[in-house]
Amino acid sequence: MSTQDELFFTENVVNVNRMVRKIIAATIIVPISFLVLTLAGIWIIPYGYSLMVLGVTIFIYLVLAVTTRNPRLQIFSMYFSIISAIIYVDILDYNEVIIITITYCCASFLSCLYYNKRFTRLTSLISFLAIVVLQLLRSFGLGTIIQPTIPADEEPLMWFISHTAGMAVEFVFVYLISTFLASRNHDTIQKLVRTKADRDIAYDKLAERNKYIIRQNGELEAVNAELNATQYKIIQFVAQCLGSHDLYTGRHLIHTQKYVDVIAKELRAEGYYEDELADKNIELLSTAAFLHDIGKIHVPEGILNKIGKFSPEEFDMMKCHTTEGKKLLEFLPPIDGGKFNDIAMKMAYHHHEKWDGTGYPNGLAGTQIPLCARIMAAADVLDALLSQRLYKDPMTIEETMDVFEKSKGGHFEPCIAQAVINCRNVIELMDKDFKTSEAATNAQELEWWRRYHENLKV
Image (cartoon, rainbow, N blue to C red):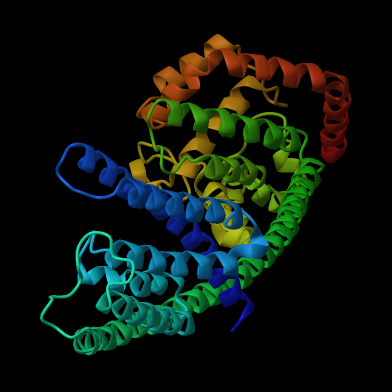
């Protein structure tokens, strides 16, 4: 028997002993009922006999009350409780106070609760032997106090033999049934205990496996987070390199990245594109904004930083930065399973498309333009209007908001233009912060590029 089996069956003995103790306590009602019914004149039972049964009951209960609480006496309690049940039934039947033949089976069937085949067999045999002794005493009228046990015209020995034979037949069935029940119960419980033990072992192994997987996932998440952080730092580095090629592009990328975040969150707050603008997607949009003008790296510096309007040829070359940006980003290694790459390419390629179809490079209109590019277009124009350029001074916040109001359904999707207008106060604060933090270096860089153009003319 396994350790698990032993633990279960030992615990079962303790539990059954407690139950038997409660049964014995309940049987106190039997001698009390003898006394009450005798006083009422319903039964005629000697008071001495009733008190003797009450004393035996109390004695058995007290012994069990002590032994069942002691872990070392549980096996003693098991045998004592069953033997007490046998004696108790025989005492009641001996004087024919209670004549119910089935009470002889009580001890045998009670022993089945211990799930011990050997103990049940032993109980059945002891019960039968006790009945044989009882029949022998009754056949000769020894100790009876109520009435003669056998008819006067019957020989005591023949009465004993006939009744013992009948009882033997009954006890054969009791023995077989109780033994079968004990054996069946024992085997069934043992299988259940082992199944539970196997299941517990499997659960423990699974729990250990889950801990290992969780630990591995945590390590992988940490590595992925570090990798993503490195990728984004590289993206920012590329944007900074691009800024050295153009007086305003570097700052423009930083500004538009923040504007994209504000516009996207306002759209979602107003109930637009809630599924597409989950927090993770907005994070991807704002980061991809760093790369929307990456194609300008293929545009000559003299055109990027020209003071004044472009010639038609220069403007055509300037417009090529959308297609050049898409080509460059096709070589970017996959980030976030390629989702970031897809957003970055769409932003770079389509951020000059207009809602009414008059933009470039493909003249797309409405929802043909990817949502990320529609948001990027608004952020791109917003910063261009509010910022200093070589060829213009910045607009005021009022003038800028007026442009967006007039451009609803034209340059911009109406809900996106309205989102910009809704965020006026936030945008105004952000614009002031940008101008304050960049004022120190702006004048120096502006002078540098003016000299560059003078030297270029020479």
